[in-house]
Amino acid sequence: MRKYKSNGELETVICNCCGKKLAVRDGIVREGGLEITHTWDYFSEKDGEIHRFDLCEECYDEVLRTFRIPVEVEETREFL
Image 1 (spheres, rainbow, N blue to C red):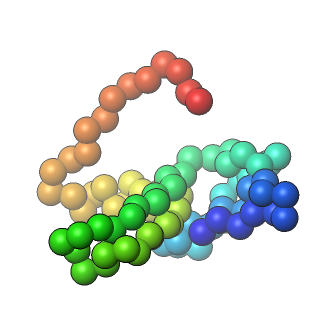
Image 2 (tube, rainbow, N blue to C red; image 1 turned 30 degrees about the vertical axis):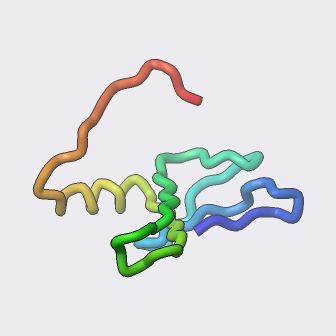
């Protein structure tokens, strides 16, 4: 869950799973987290809905442990 200041700057990020407040400084998340935004379209029960949520790194790892097929992991050298 994300909260923004009136000027649009990111103020708070809270893990939707465990409720942990992630470190945010100067509008930038300062620790590992995953932001998901997904727009559901035709052939789903959620047509036209947009779902947004955040997971801390620990909850993300916990979710991955439930996957039958592991995620693909690729290394990168540049961070945006």
